[in-house]
Length: 437
Image (cartoon, rainbow, N blue to C red; front, top):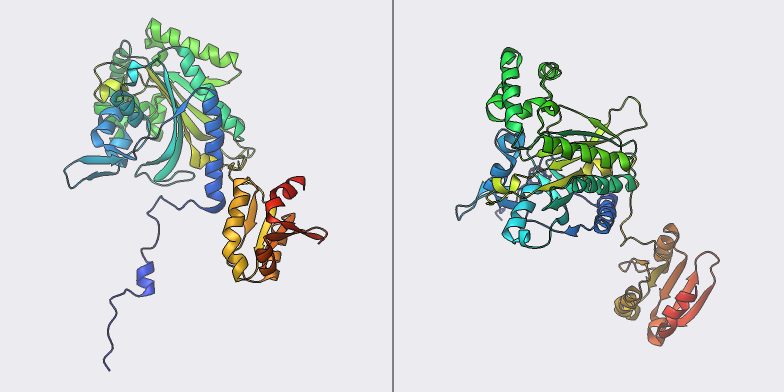
């Protein structure tokens, strides 16, 4: 008899590609709950301050990001995931939330409702970056944004709300690096001064920073090149170029921070990596108990008053935002391991025995669910011993034993797991009985 060759790949060959893409991973079990617990805490604080939820698509027209974030940034030049659809559309996985939020604000006519409009949003974003500690190609952000007001108090309020979330998640030794990069009235003069300065040191600039000199000179201030860092020490100070309005705005932001007891450090070379920022920019770092461990950046943000016009609006929309890197927060040693509200320690363990009992089990469990009684169960198990062993391992105080006899009599045995005492209770009186316990 001839053997039929299987077209199915061998297990070894089939499993070769059964892994997540580089820089991405599965969230499950305790790690999933850690993320959800953080989101619920962040949401709680955000709602208190008046932020409302919004969820934008994971994909946008590519131009939304290229025109908003700007050419000459690492995100646009190297890190975006893009594709062309069968219909000819050019789409990109969102590398951040802000441009999508501003697109939604414009598209839905939110400028016509009372301002400011405040939103929080949470979800994955995607950048084809080199994965490193606490950073992935698919990573999660929680953002707070206020759109429609240029008042300095909105900068301070967004920062305060963000800092409150981080502190309640367990963040320690928080510090803020902050700067103002001016607006269109004063930034052009500063950029000219900056370009002239770098041209004097053109021979010492690396290839990447020479290219930035043509496309986005401000980004050189944020360079990681050691030689450029040395040059940046003596770079022109943006503070000296600020117009009176920008100086006043920045002074007020700092006064609010001081009043709230939020410490800060003015960093003249802080510009942030996205071209839409204007005036206030900041980065938030958390310290560690280990003196050999450098502070880690866990949040950042700033004002982006010109983003709306960059992505197609006829008018500017003043706005300010605060973005948190949830992956780094959850992975930090100080994270409180916030537990989601849905996770409640079970008070009873449901045990079923026999065909008739198993048939009616789901109805009994649903009755307990509707009464908000937290339970655990293992319906696939068949023996009393195996189910009691799980109940003891989970340290559940009471077990509900639902056997053939009980199923026929519409009753259940309630066993005290600590002293092994038990009592038979009619199902119609079970909730009242459990409440008394």
